[in-house]
Length: 372
Ligand SMILES: NC(=O)c1ccc[n+]([C@@H]2O[C@H](COP(=O)([O-])OP(=O)(O)OC[C@H]3O[C@@H](n4cnc5c(N)ncnc54)[C@H](O)[C@@H]3O)[C@@H](O)[C@H]2O)c1
Image 1 (tube, rainbow, N blue to C red):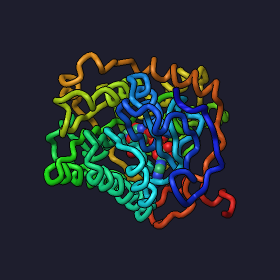
Image 2: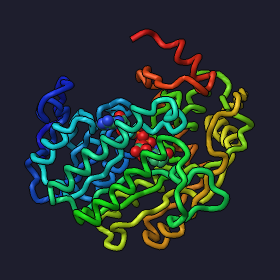
Image 3: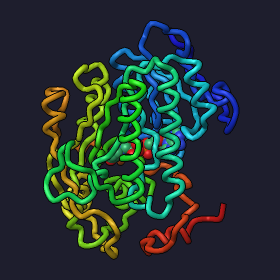
């Protein structure tokens, strides 16, 4: 039996105890494999944590709540509020627990904003990740380090990219993801730290952050519908992505660490359907049961077409990969959004480092922000 669910006032510095927000089983169920899930209060991390709990793992979550929500954290796991950039905290966590698996989802995943927050992007998404990789190497107990990379590493694609297509990342977010992929491969060669890298493709669904104006287009559209304002589309909306419901992702990721053939492999994971953003806007309107108007904004600097082959993941994981149609997935998310409503906005990003080429709509949004 784990300890009862407790909450404590979060502190920003200090020991793991200071950061512990819920303690439900730490150091009690010793025989279960322990998984560390970073970004556990976020969208994908919280779903994977729930899948791990259902599979009998003991789960410790770490998240600084910068983009995730406390209410996302599944019951039954320990949760530490803190940053992957806090090296001392990470080292202490690894001293306290022998993590058999690390699932690393913590990142600020605003791809198109990353051009304008370059230092923060590399500090958070590269150096924060390195703190975890170092701790995993030093612990010698980690059997698999799972890394949430992105289809963004391919950059613009002329045809469906396979895992052996040379990545050509086109923005700092994607460059950071690719840097960590390369670092993990180097750590696997020298230190024998096994890894699995997933290149996710536009994952959406229940529990996703819908209040960050810089990312998660489906969440942005749903929020705009709830607010009764037009859906904002950059350019003519012909840019295509493969929108993938979380149920097609989380079970595979959680189960894969015990799949021997998956170790030290890279997998594209996502839907095969390519959808232009303009079509997506109509599908989201249908799912929300509203006929929403669209407002076209000047085109921004982004890849027009990103497409991937998922044949490798399908041949490795077979039935674990459930395909659900985009319409079904959007209906599920719309139901959740209608029930949950619009959460309180987070102070997404105040410190824009580069303003040249910053889309005008974002510049206006920044001007509207209250002073710190
Ligand atoms: N959702 C997608 O479409 C998608 C696609 C490709 C890759 N990914 C990757 O998957 C991962 C999860 O993405 P998501 O969509 O769930 O985003 P999310 O924002 O919902 O989750 C990320 C979580 O990380 C936390 N976080 C951020 N910086 C942190 C830090 N320094 N220390 C501790 N916690 C921190 C946030 O609070 C948030 O809860 C990310 O690494 C992202 O880059 C997501």
